[in-house]
Image (cartoon, rainbow, N blue to C red; front, side, top):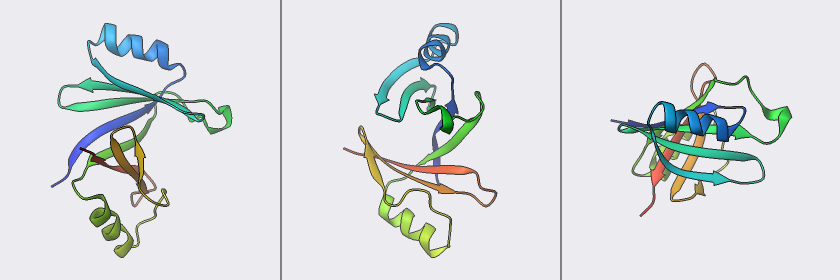
Length: 122
């Protein structure tokens, strides 16, 4: 059985959104990851995580407040990705890749919804 890992939400300004989720809703900061494309803010919400996604490239931006993807925790990334391939699932990521202490992989659900597998690395 899969467990939901996190929900990613597109935001306009990660600093303003981070302040709201921390100060107004009382969530806890798990971490921040930034690269040339995006600023990701991970916030602990009970047993799950909310990921705030600020895209740096204006052309890539979706409407704000939209759920960008749903992520599931997996124990064996390669096994799960192979199953996706066997089932002819549309893959977004070429190969799993590392972000911080997590290995991640994106793919699509049957209606084009963006889904993600996350393997926590030791």
